[in-house]
Length: 450
Image (cartoon, rainbow, N blue to C red; front, side, top):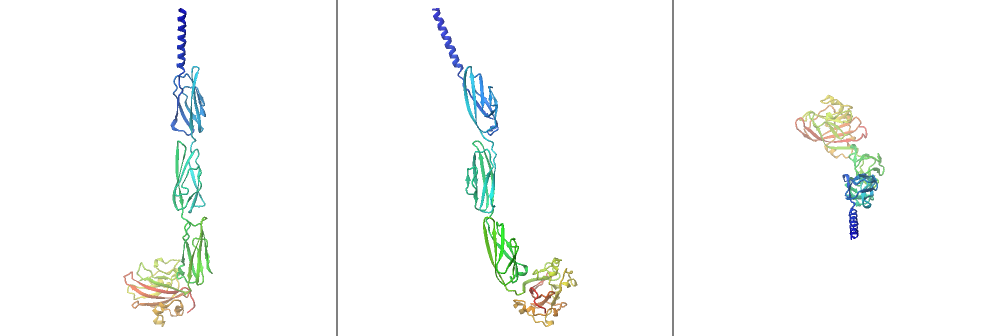
């Protein structure tokens, strides 16, 4: 009986020990991986939090990590320097029993985000732009091209984008990975398409478009890189690739002036027809205003070269030699009037004129027996009537006349032999600012001696 009881006690003890051993091996390896600063782009640091309960030994393996292994219960921080998938493994023991847990940690490359537009040929519409993607480390790309074709792309390197219309267009690139995105924009400026245009203006002496004539061009083309001017017939051109060209049209007739333009994308041609009239050798100027001697706002110094009247204060070294005559009117009563030679300016109320010329005048036609009526003046279409007049021989430069009967004719001849006539049409009495209005016809060039 005693031996039988001892056997039962031994069996119970073995069962108890066995159950104890089974209970001791019931442990579960567990851990968390916590990012430092929420940074998943290498280099990145992670804290390993061991949540295992009941184990007495540990072996950590950090694939690609620093450190690569650890036997500490709490290994602390691990640094990873390479992107990709990293296996983290914990093997732990309780006595002779072991268990393990693995987690995969996916890390991203550091993203450098940038792109650069590269305009093909030039910025004149239509514009093709190649976009150079300088981004590194990203796996996703989203392009948006405002006003472009295509309007968007998900390729790393999109095909060249065409912008047809002039304007400013926003281009946006979003690049990144599953965790982080970067965005930047740039602006593409598209200039207008090539538009060819020009205007022609005669020189001051050729406003009547009579032969020979000098014309100046002004290139008003838009988006033009190169120009070439040509002229038909016997015309000639100076500075034929410049913005402002000069054309010499010697004979009467029709001329074609052509502008060729090019901006490396388009070429255009524009022509204009110009008619040059026969030469009358006569300038006709209408409604020319002359002020009395006291006038401060209206001049008395006439130049057929500049086709205008100058104030005394406007006369200088450059234009003094171009003054043909001075219309002297003493005051608002218009009783003492006289066409003065420029070299006589300082004999009256004016200062000497630099480079002044000698001009002969006939202030009283009747006294010299010269027949030249207002009708003769008005009917002149060329210089033949003036050319027949003997003005220099009949000079009455010292005579005065009154403007009490209008119209009134005065004749003059410059030292270089150009003849002219002044027809006073109107007087305006306004105190010291009184003035008269006259028409003037004068030869362009001398044709013969009187």
